[in-house]
Length: 140
Image (cartoon, rainbow, N blue to C red; front, side, top):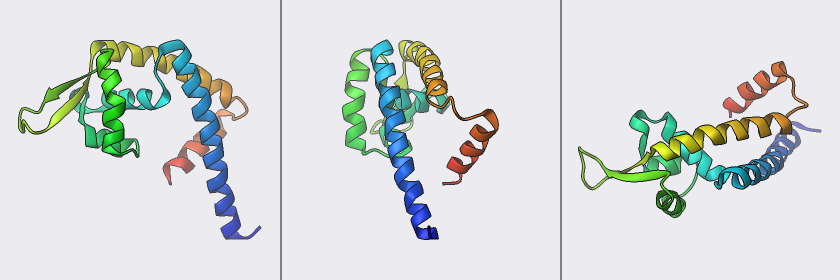
C-alpha cells in the first residue's frame, strides 16, 4: 500500500468508526437523558467556557456546524431549560448562550453515561494505546 492509499484508508476508517461510535453514544444519551450527542457537545463546550457562556457562532465553530444549524439545535434545548439566552453587557447586539443549572446537572449525568458507553465501545484498547490514540487525534 503506498503512502497516499494509507492516508486515504485512515480517513475512511476514521469516518466510519466515528459514525459508528457517534450512533451508539447518540442512542445511549437519547434513551437515558433525552439528548443527542450533538446537544451533549454543546453542553460540554458551555461547561468549558468562561462564565459557562458562548456566542452561537463560537459554538458553531467549536462543533464544525453552521450558525443556523446551532440556532435550530439550541431552540429545543432552551425550551426544556438546558440553556438560556442572555445579552452581552458590552454589546447588546450579541446574545450569549448560557448553560442553566438544569443543563449542568444533565451534563454531569450524561457524562457518566457517555464515559461508560465509550469504555464499552473501546474495550479492546488498553490504556497505553488510548493515550497514543489521543495524541494522534490531537495532531490532526
